[in-house]
Image (cartoon, rainbow, N blue to C red; front, side):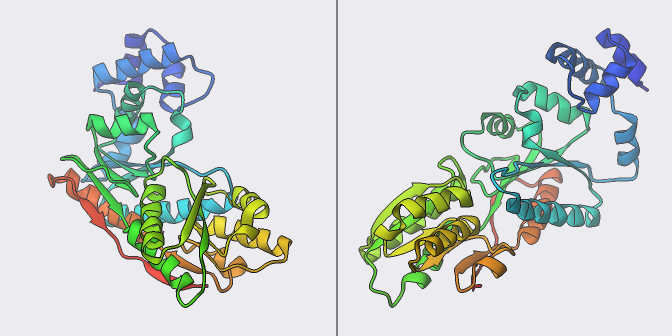
Amino acid sequence: MVSIKDVARHAGVAISTVSKVLNNYPNISEATRKKVYQAVEELNFVPNSVAAALSSKQAGRVALMIDLNVKTQAIDEMAMRYISGAITRAMELNLDVITLFVFMFQEKTTDELIRYLKSQSITGIIIYGLAEDHELLQELVKREEFKCVVVDGNNVSENTSSVTIDHKKAQYEVAETLLKDTDIGKILYISGDEYSYVTKTRMEGMKVLAEEKKYELTSIYANFSESKAKKIVLEQGKNFDAIVCASDLMAIGAKNALLELGVERPICGFDGISLMQYYGKGIYSISQNFSDISAKAMDELHLLMNGNGGRMVEVEYKLIQN
């Protein structure tokens, strides 16, 4: 059986260095990390902690890859509900789970990330919110060295599934509900991140509605930030008859801006986060059960790991008024 001492000898480094690399310590040179990961891969080394975890599991080891939105602390609610849903379902499926955050790997190449994941004996990955411009994760999925499920994406292949709601339809429905029976002409649509799958699909729904109802639509990106949404509305809010936001956080920012301006405009959000119960009274939104979505993603990953092919899985949502 290969030991950490064998890896150190093979890589030409100290045993403590191997331990630090495997535990993702900072202040380790990239050259040293490469040598250690290469030795791990060549010797097919499984760390004791991983081996111990796997010995009590049957189905495999899964990594949750989460891209935290650091623009606001409130977004942590979504991440925690994702993690909770995935881990609860993984326990039922007898899967071992580790949670990783995208910022941990910003300086790594795809090969380095793959070596790290293999050193942790990962067999499947769930990626939350895969942006089109995130080259590292896009390449990781494309390489198909792991079974992958993308939450809120459209990545589908033999080894990859996507789990999502119908964002286009949902955005259409919540905006239509907000604007029905009103005499409105000009709409400000505060959108998310231009490279995000959910941003593009939600915008498609908004464009369809505007075309059907003959609304004059202006779209501005606010990167899912309530502070940016507030700034946009403070500067331009008075010029529009209604404000549609592609997230609840941005709707909260927009509402606060209108309060400062002393004007009223119809507003709707999207996501169904708990903060809306306190700050978004009367605002329509789309409620997503993030725990259930994540559990569904774990179910789908389990199927992939047991030989099923990739597919697109659509999850239900609800139109709500806070």
